[in-house]
Every structure is written in C-alpha cells, then in structure tokens.
Length: 266
Image 1: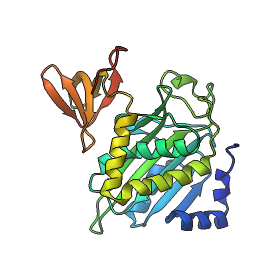
Image 2: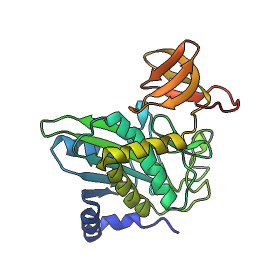
Image 3: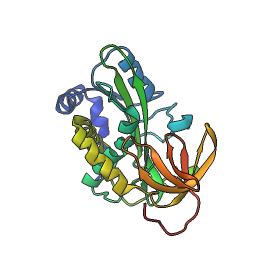
Image 4: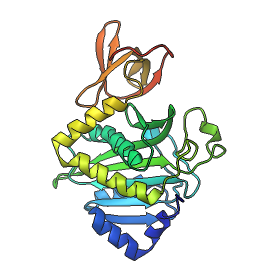
C-alpha cells in the first residue's frame, strides 16, 4: 500500500468529514514548528477535542527535550487534545503505547513491543514514542498527547540513529499514514472510555513489555543510576525493580538493558 493519503487532509471537505467521523476537530499542516506546541495552545485557549497533524515539523521534540526530526511526509506526527484531563495523565501517556501497538497490528504489524515508559519498538529499536502535557483548568483541563511514528524513513535517513531507531519501512512494512492516524484515534478513545478498558490496556502493556524480567539500569536527574531486574509494571504505571535492597518503584527515568543475559520471570 502506498503511503500517500495523508495529503488528503489538506482538502477541507475531507478534513471536515474525518473530523465528524473521529469526533474531534482536525488541523493539518504541511509544515509546522511543533504539533505539540500548537495543540498545547489550542488546549490553553479552551479548544475542545482536537487533533493537530503535520507532514513535517521543524522544532519537534520527544521526552527529555530530545529533537524528533523526520524528512517531510516520512512520519506520522500528531498531537491530540483530550478532554477531560485523565485522572492519571502519566499512566494514560504510557498506555498510548498500547494504542500504537494495536493500531499497527490492525495494519499488519503484529509484533510491536513496549519499552518503559513511552517507547514502541520493532526489532528491538524505537519506531514510535509519546509525549504528554497536562493542562489544568476549572473546566476539567485537558491532556495534550503527542505521538510520532517513523513510517517511511530509509536506513540512510536514520543513519545517525541506526543503533536505536527504525521505521516501519525499514522493518518491511508499508503502512498508510492516514489509516494509521484513524486507527490511533479510535484506540486512544477506546482506552479513555472506561476503567475496564484501561485495565485491559495495562495488561496488554505487560504482555508486550520488552524489558520485564531483564536486568536494567535506570538513569534520572533525581540521583545515581538504579540497577535491578525489571520485575513488573505497577497499576499506576511505575516500573518495579527488584534490587539488592528490595523492590523499588521508578516513576521517571531512562531505562537500558544492563546485560544480554537470559530473561528472569518477572
């Protein structure tokens, strides 16, 4: 399948029809500084459910402020304004990885794995990530959720990140960005619908986890690195490590495998 349909969102009639189908207003930009910054401005102004999509962004970033750069029309770059603000925004951002994995499975990519907290992997490399910003307000606030998926990048275009990043095309999958966007919207809405849906998504996150049962190191700005076996994912999204001094809950940080030893039972 050729990935050439996202440009249809440039047509106001198509955008209006899809907005009605997906239950949210849609902005499409051929080029923008950041979908996340634009969605945040919409949320701050009181905009209802909304979606900002771009073919290219010049100042996109992921977690820890790292730049997210992609050649034009090679990635799905989108940010959602979700209202009301979920009770646990950090957990919802983590479960967004499940929404990405489910959407990819619907499009013939069944083997996506999840790395804590917000990365989606194929073949052990990052193919997608999520970023969340909470907006508090008397009306219940909103969550601004940004998701980037590497869709069409070639190995040459990801040369500087070849050790850690990949794309759907590199992994042998041809995916239509518009189809992926529509499925992502539906899966995010599904997870947001009820506590039961979120519990099911949390169970699926555990089943797709790439590091549970492995010895890892977690680095954060809060102190020295923490090492242990990634034993479980708590119900609030915290990573539970089995360390030499007992279980430790990790709420934020960057996780990496310490050794390539056999997996332990979590």
